[in-house]
Image 1 (cartoon, rainbow, N blue to C red):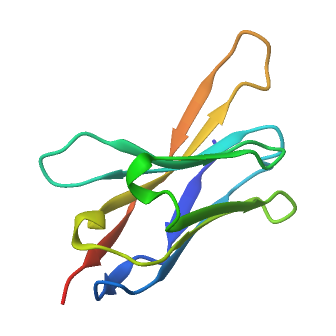
Image 2 (image 1 turned 90 degrees about the vertical axis):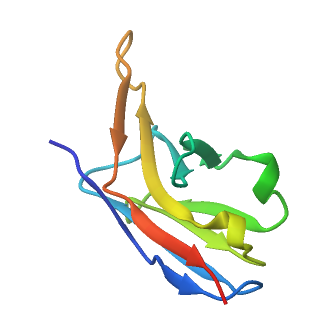
Length: 119
C-alpha cells in the first residue's frame, strides 16, 4: 500500500518561513499532488496543488506567500511557506489524487504535520 509521509512542521513566528516535504513510497509520476490544511474547528481546505507536469494552483489565502513544487524522481512534493501568519496555524496534510488507471480514482493522505505560527 502506498504511503505518504510529511515532515517539516513546527513553531514559527509571524512573518517567518517554513518548508514542508512529503515523500511517497512509490512513483508520483502522473499523480496530482497537493497540500491541504485543517485548523481546529474548521473544515479541511486546499492550500496548493500541482499536476505531474508542474501546473500549480493555490488557495486565495496563500497566493503570493506559498510555493508548491515537486520532484518526480525523488517522489517528493514540497511546500515553501513565507510571510506566515497566525491564521496559517493548522495541521498540514499531503494529498495524492491518482487517476492513472482509467475509471479509477484513488485518494491518499499523509498523517499530517502541525504548523503553528505564534509569537
